[in-house]
Image 1 (cartoon, one colour):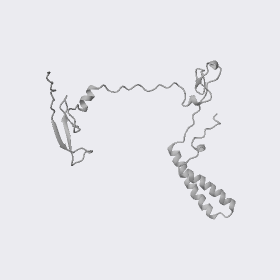
Image 2 (cartoon, helix red, strand yellow):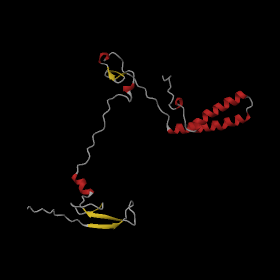
Image 3 (cartoon, rainbow, N blue to C red):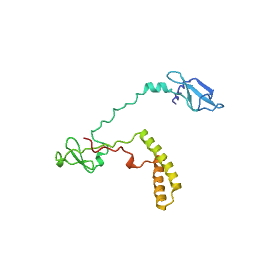
Image 4 (tube, one colour):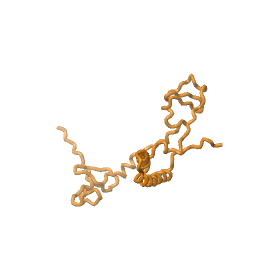
Length: 181
């Protein structure tokens, strides 16, 4: 009969400490065991027999590889949703699919960017709308004719919406001067 080999069990230092970290209960005891490589005490579960601390694991494992940022193709955002887009090289795309037959036969698509109003301009617009609402409400209290009351209440409703910060699309962008000479 063959004799069974008995595995030698390495003993590591085990301690039980009261909770002292922010996520521990102060009245509970937690098991700590020494790392099998460096000997640093690390919190473990009740049935753990050995532990490798986080510092040793970090040294064993290679750091994450970060790739460089995605390089832009030189086309504007949403070009593949356009019915037809012609880039600066003359390539024609219809709904994002290149059409080689039309290459060089169309002029490049010109994308004009709308200038949005700034935060300060938006705040000024809201303040101005609230001032106008105040004046219109005074007028409304003095109005007697039905047509004046309707006109004023409609204007108050529109301006109070702007005063709450809900600016309509027509006012969100700066107006461009068409007569620049």
